[in-house]
Image (cartoon, rainbow, N blue to C red; front, side, top):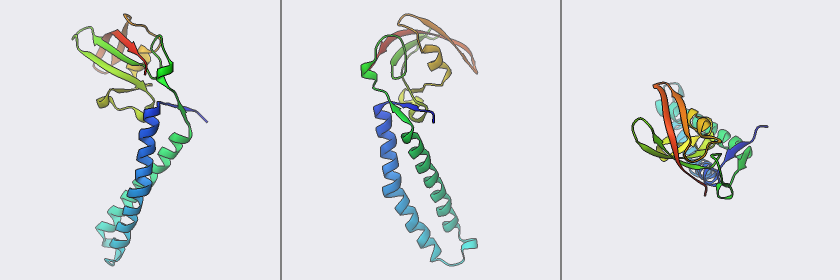
Length: 156
């Protein structure tokens, strides 16, 4: 079975979500289904169908999180150094717009671009892997090629 790289923070975030789903969301939806059943005819009971749909989503997410966590390989970025690799926090500057952005390269399960958590499999992360400070990389995007210079690489 393929191991999934995760940072310690990513593991804790996913673990917290799993605990919340199991301890709060699952019992709440079971109560909502029981309540909706009391309203009679289930075939025309919108509350019941909505609750069952939400239950299906919750159970699916629980299975997904359990699968991710069971295959997780926790990588501690603070023990790493050198060129860009998983866990690195990288500050780049867009060579066309001079816009600076900082990303941490993380596993797919914990990626969140709005929080600066860049998916290891994304075109930008793939272009950055193995590069050093001062290097320029070209990234092909749907909007055309973009060029970035690596300003800072840090771990931890």
